Amino acid sequence: MLMQEKRYTEDHEWIELSQDGKTGTIGVSVYAAKSLGDVVFVELPALDLEVTAGDSMGAVESVKSASDILTPVSGKIIEANNVLQEKPGTINKSPEGDGWIARIEVKDGGEVDKLMSMDAYAKFTAE
Image (cartoon, rainbow, N blue to C red):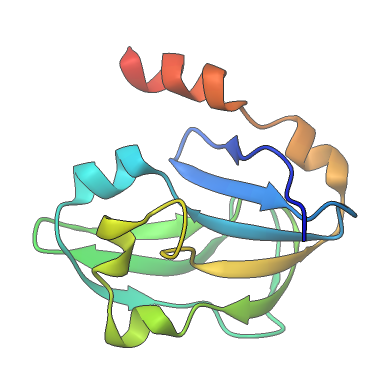
């Protein structure tokens, strides 16, 4: 399945849409994973959970802090990355790859267009 460019939120989540734009994979950015430190627990979203952009859909706990995971777009959670239940540190090793959090059925692709591109996010985190 071909993926489109990742888009980022100011809260350091990312979403990558499938080529058809109907589903998105959500995770936390490399920047967020570094800021969190060693992740020790991940609260995954419930399947079929209906969310609106900006809603909390789970949480990540690290040795330093706990942070809500906010959904970048509205839709319905269709899959959660169960690997994170046993290996929460996957988020530290591969936050924008194997450490993805959930997959969502996207309600409005236009919401994705409003998010930051990789370049814009790089500038945002450099400030």
